[in-house]
Image 1 (cartoon, one colour):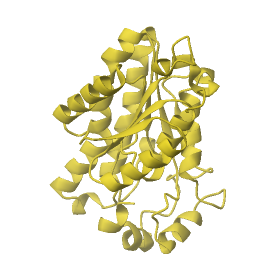
Image 2: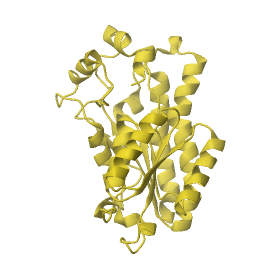
Image 3: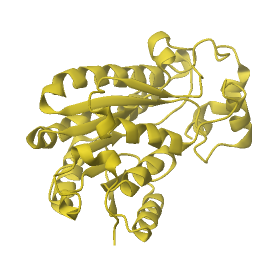
Length: 287
């Protein structure tokens, strides 16, 4: 039997918190593992009916769902490539069919990462990073708006990156930086447009996070550059997401909340640090 939902998300729930049909529906993209999984787990444990979106790794998504159901949470996995508008439409149709309503919480977590200088960035890599990090967020959020407007409330969260990088850029990361800068600007645009309809839009910007898949040499390189002396955890990012969708953040919209232990890309040795190239380029970057 699922326990009563936490007070952390009551602002976007119907009036009867004991009625399972009144619980908020949360969609988390790219939620099979890593930060996305931690966010999905947090929202499910807080009482949301949680949809775990995945593109390829069905086994990881199924494992997340099984773990949550074992705790009495209601969760399901739905496969969809959220860079494809037709698949995004199908995803929302499936959610409405399964749960009887549209999502009132959307967390745009999906996004590939890789490092390469402009001269070394292929057309395919550029398009893939822009599609994965920026276009997917736009497509999913746009599709979520009609249901949220009809309900008169909603929460949209984007996963961004260090604000200093977004403003100033940095060497070896053009596609990712451009995409995440776009996410930050989209956050502010959408927040202003949707505020009259009871919808808040915010960005959570992780710094260097141990997602559980880092080779030891990458983890050590990253940890040495964080003022806090350690890497963040996916659960700490999930805590930030839980805050911006909570009733306590009802007047917070258009904000970027950094979860970085004081770390920023700016003034860090990335431009000529050979370790960047050796540790993070190409396949090793998709962590």
